[in-house]
Length: 85
Picture: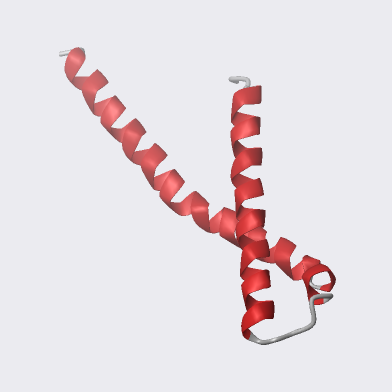
């Protein structure tokens, strides 16, 4: 059984990606407050929704990332298969 190693570099990259998603959701909330002329207190009272939206954005971003990683590993295996012949 192989051990799974998660490097600190990968943890920091994922943290930074999530922080960007949270920032994007926060900006969306501010735009909604401006567009619908709501009171500014909603910037803090709706933080739960901002958190949920940021998680949604983060997991949506996993789709292209997984496709990229899968395609990258697929091409890597093809190159290795030809090198053994």
